[in-house]
Length: 62
Image (tube, rainbow, N blue to C red; front, side, top):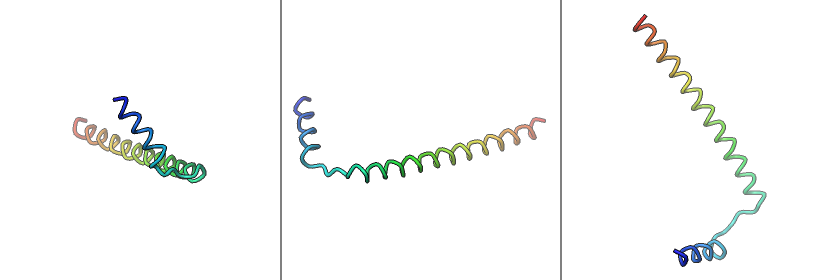
């Protein structure tokens, strides 16, 4: 296990190409914005389905 961790750290130091800090920050903002938009869209669809199901059962029972 220790060997695996050492080799993983060595891989990160020598073989991984890292983005520039400014580009990584820009991409992080884009991911955050799309995550928020997707969460809002999911919340909206969930609310709509909840209201439709409530209406359906009110009509069915009442």
